[in-house]
Image: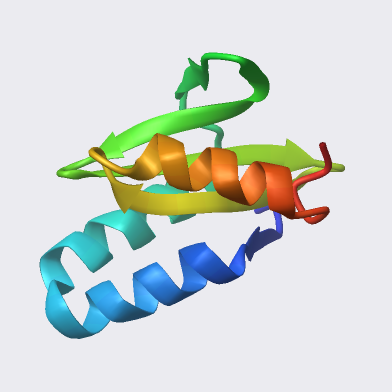
Length: 97
């Protein structure tokens, strides 16, 4: 099972959902566990070919592999996930531009 890391945004969102929407938080954790053992065939993110997206209810999970470490970049609602991702991508060296 591969190691994984969450960006601060993803960690905070998952923590908030664990308090307010336990069902969605559990689904997201299940998807992360599946990604750790076997990469699900997520859809490539347009304009960012290294990143993939997976739909989990009303949320999108954006991830990538960096040196065999699963990086969960964004967990956000569908309406705002792409704006949040672009902002984080432009302002973070963590995502390895």
